[in-house]
Image (cartoon, rainbow, N blue to C red):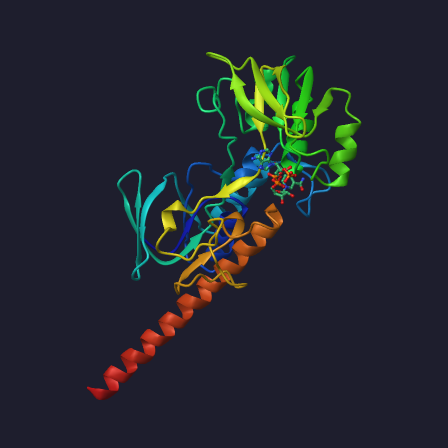
Amino acid sequence: MHSKVVIIGSGPAGLTAALYAARANLEPLVIRGLQPGGLIATTSEVENYPGFVEAIGGFELADNMEKQAARFGARYMDALVEKVDLSQRPFRLLTDGGEEVTAETLIISTGASPRKLGVPGEEKLANRGVSYCATCDGFFFRGKKVVVVGGGNSALDESLFLTRYVSELTIVHRRDALRADPILQERIFANPKVNFVWDSVVEEILGDDKVTGVRVRNVKSGETSVIATDGVFPYIGHIPNTWLFKGQLELDANGYIIADHRTRTQIPGVFAAGDVVDHVYRQAITAAGEGCKAAMEAVWFLGEQEHAAKKAAESVAALA
Ligand code: NAP
C-alpha cells in the first residue's frame, strides 16, 4: 500500500493532520495503533476543548474527529506499526499484520502511554483491579473502594469521574500538595467520598487473583501501612511512544522526538506532532494544532518535491 501522507497514531494530533491532509486531496492513510482515538478517547469528560459549551466525552470527541476527516477522504487502517525504515523515501513501514506501507511523507503522532508504577503486583493484577482507564473500567467499581495514585490533572479528573460509582476513593500522592489545576483541586476537596494519603508512595499492590489492597510507604517517616482497596488507578504521567524510531530519529533525554516549531524532524518529509514531542503542554488542543501544522508542512513538502521533479524533467527534455 502506498500513500502520499501516512499518519501513525489516531489521537487529536493524528486526526487533525488527517483532516488537513484529506482536505488537500491527499487521501492520507491513518494507521490507528493500539489505542484508536489516542489517550483522549479514554478520558471521561473534556471541558477545555474550545467550541463545546458543555463537557464532551473524550471518546465522542475523538470519534467526531475521525468521522470529520473521513468525510474528506482520510483512510484508516487498524494495525500497529512494528518496523519503520526512514533511511530513504518512500519511507517503509511494516505492520503487525505483515502489510508493507510506503509513504512519501510521514506524520508521527504516536502519543504517550500511561507511566506504570513499576511495583510488585502491578503486572499480575492488571485488569484484575489495576486499571489505567477510569472511563473504561469505572463502572465495574460500583459501590467499591479504589485508590488513585498521583496528584496531577489526570489523577484528579479521573478521580472525580470515579466518584460517580465508588463508595470511597483514596488519593495517594508522593508530596503534600497537588500539582493539578486549582479548579480541579477545589472540586476534589469538596467531594465527601475522597480522602488523601499524603507524602506516600505505593510500594506493592496486594492480592492473589484480584486487588485487595496496596502497601504504601510514607516518604517522610518511612512508615509503611496497608490500605484495603478493590481497585488501583495509577495516574503518574506518561512516557512517549518512540521505541519504533530509536536510532533513526533524534530523541531527547526523556525519549521524546526532537522536532522544530514547524513539526519537522531531522529527516526531510518526516514530521512529528502531539504528545510524542510535547512534554510541556500535552493538551488535546495543542496536539490538534501541531497535527494541523504537520499536515500543512507535508502538503508544502510534497509540492516542493513535485516542483523539483518537474524542473528536473524539463532540464532533461531541454538537453535531449
Ligand atoms: P502530570 O501532570 O505529569 O502529573 C503526574 C503526577 O504523578 C504528579 O502529581 C507527580 O507527582 C506524580 N508522579 C509522577 N511520577 C510518580 C511516581 N513514580 N510515583 C508517584 N507519583 C508520581 O501528568 P498527568 O496528570 O497525566 O497530566 C499530563 C498532562 O495532561 C498535563 O499537562 C496535564 O495538565 C494534562 N491534563 C490536563 C487535563 C485538564 O486540563 N483537565 C486533564 C488531564 C491531563 P509530583 O506532583 O510530585 O511531580
